[in-house]
Amino acid sequence: MEILDGKVVSARIKEDIAKEANDFFEVTGRKPHLVAILVGHDGGSETYVASKIRNCEKVGFKSTLVRYEDNVTEDELLAKINKINDNEAVDGLIVQLPLPEHIDPEKVTAAIDYRKDVDGFHPINLGRMMRNLPCFIPATPYGIMLMLEYYQIETEGKHAVVIGRSNIVGSPMSILLARNSNPGNCTVTLTHSKTQNLPDIVRQADIIVAAIGRKNFVTADMVKEGAIVIDVGINREESSETKSGYKLYGDVDYEQVAPKTSWISPVPGGVGLMTIVGLLKNTLKSAKGDIY
Image (cartoon, rainbow, N blue to C red; front, side, top):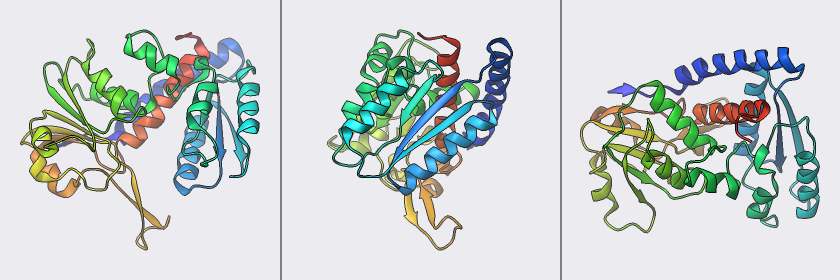
């Protein structure tokens, strides 16, 4: 059993990003600029955004955090997005999800200029990804593909089972693994909460991507010997054992599953770190005009 170590991979890729960002600054006199909008005080969102801002600074990006209280109106938020869209000094814009119930996340996502949509959620970017055209790939699937590439994981001809069909992870992940590329060229089964005989399907997988958002959902009896397991789950539970007051669990029962695998990603220390890398690479590409 080998570890798909997000700490190792992200550190190595961030070194390359920092060098490219420095070269960009020397040529243009400015740093790649990411703006993050955070609405409310959700604990997970606070943590994620703080990590994104911190990592921007580490690689030599400029970052701006725009904060709103939970009672911000949808119109006010959309007006701010439009203003940032028009700001040529901004290369990337993300709006941290989830949003309060009175704000439509689909409307917010569509309002972001797709040329600054470094999270890769805009319908234009998702559509271009479907057609295998240049685009901003959703940050988490992008990070996973970078991890597979780093460890030279053989994917061609393998049966990949993706658990979870969200537009953020599951659906784009299934597309990326299936398309004619390296990594890629998998035969992909996309499963979800309504899939019948799910354990039987997962047991057939050479590669499992668990992104269903349920603690320890994938158990040892669902995994065949030698499978590659990628755990996307980040399930927070209160804990007196940690300084933060909470503990993270994946969608995979790591202790029981890991001995059966050839490769497995831990939580924390796996895919979450690679999501940040995907976001940084998209922002750098936006600044350099490599996509649009």
